[in-house]
Image (cartoon, rainbow, N blue to C red; front, side):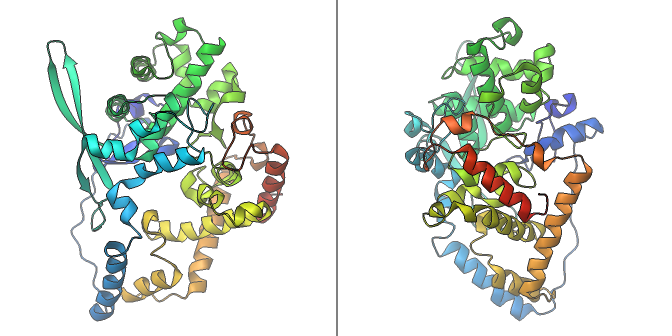
Length: 420
């Protein structure tokens, strides 16, 4: 696990690279490590865990393995990976485009998972011990000097990177998306936050909130050159504007203005889902303000739940509690449909940890409460969350969102977690 120059400079959205192709990207862990003069951490394991009942272990292992590799449950993640979401969300009108001025991108096909696979994919990798192969690695041919001097880079891509460094910035070439992926990797920046900050800055320039002189470059949707220069200036911290932007978009709009078109959920730059009330609330109120906290974006796509939005808050809380269980056991959320409560219980029993389903639910409740308490101690104010006008201007698959409905669901959520 290592940081880059962004972490060393204390950029608030600096991430941590893990085993080359994975990241602890969000929430600024890279800046935390950089603040402690910690460049990297190497973990080497040499011990084995004894298995008390090898026959039972093998039985459970074979069942999970079979469901992972011989059914369609994980096919999406192996075939195209999460980049498959580009065309799906674009068709729904839920793909944030040009700083969320639009919910679909007319050039989505050109930067789709299918396009990346056809044009660039060279291999698929897995995390240790996993048979699925969801890490998609492509080949990016980069010119590094005049006179036809090229080198080839291998870069991992997925939906969030294509959204944040592609449609959100109006970029329609895989090579341009790769150029930005390459740059954020070199600097150790979180790709999602980087893209959302640049999308805001592009619109802020057009509106006169920031100037070309301050940016030291020109920014325009669809033009990659300015964004590459922006990232250079950001990590250089070349002036007061970049020092402000380096503290994150919420801090920047507090000083500069432009809140109405800042795409923030609970203070964190948004992930790539403009699906409806679930995404808006789930991102804003989840413990990490992440789309992975409670999958509000998936609840939005449930046709039955969309008819009963009053149930959304309870569903978000219940899903987050169960995901706390999965996360605490280092279970991949891509495989969450495999690891239902009976399967998790069977897997734990197979290694000598006897728990009932009620124990697992209690574990999720406990973790959820601990996260809420940690946020309270750190000064988080649940009542202080605001929602940008941009989320209500750009239609979702549920139509234009209503602030009144959001506030009602918000109040239900706060009651559900005891923060009303």
